[in-house]
Length: 133
Image 1 (tube, rainbow, N blue to C red):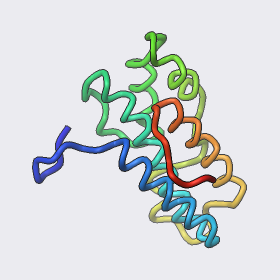
Image 2 (image 1 turned 90 degrees about the vertical axis):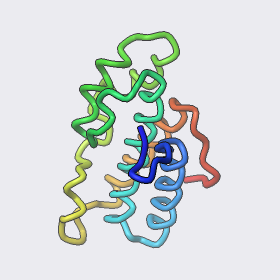
Image 3 (image 1 turned 60 degrees about the vertical axis):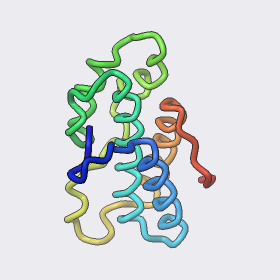
Image 4 (image 1 turned 30 degrees about the vertical axis):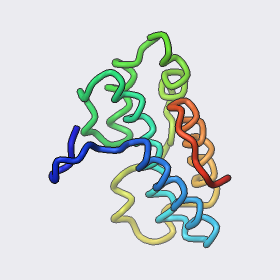
């Protein structure tokens, strides 16, 4: 897929950027924005892996992205790691609508769970971050 300016979407690079910013915000105690970005990092990791199979279904956000991703990845060789992560309710409770939620919606515990899940998604997509969480 391409952006409005004609450049290709960079799901891997975006996943790293969102992940690293989320970790920095977590360290600063800004859990709501960290939570928002960690969801985008997870979404980009999934889309990066899906991108290997074409563009269909990539416009959705989590959690709506998951059914399309499950269907496309299935038990294909080379995609089993990602599929095993997304066949459950990964990032349970995360929603793009949290961007409109009042401060305090994202708890430290929920954020920690989402970060752990996102690290697994990044690994399954073959994406490496420069920051350790």
